[in-house]
Length: 114
Image (cartoon, rainbow, N blue to C red; front, top):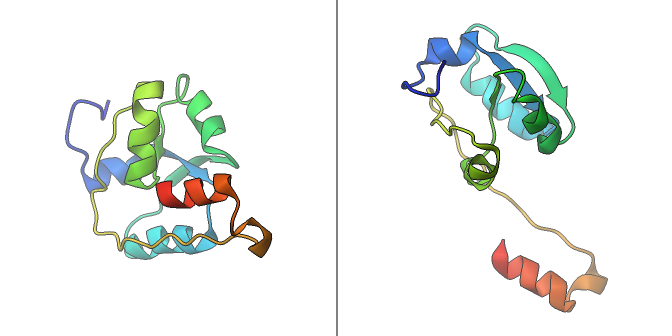
């Protein structure tokens, strides 16, 4: 029902959501942005994005993920990506790796991609 229209904050809050088991800091940022608003309707908590995406065929749910990730999986799963209908403070990603991997060609390649 939301695919063909602009999503309002009321739409976002009233539709069912799936929570991906993400870093608690990221979850806290979302909750902080919605602090004064009614609670979202959480109907699913998945430990992997793929698990939540598999359920989307049978249950129309909203999954809040970083835009880069959303666009990456949208075409493969025939999803609609919408901007958040509220202000959200972007967060930074960090990379860490073990010292023994410092000169690994595969690790070096991955670090240039990310």
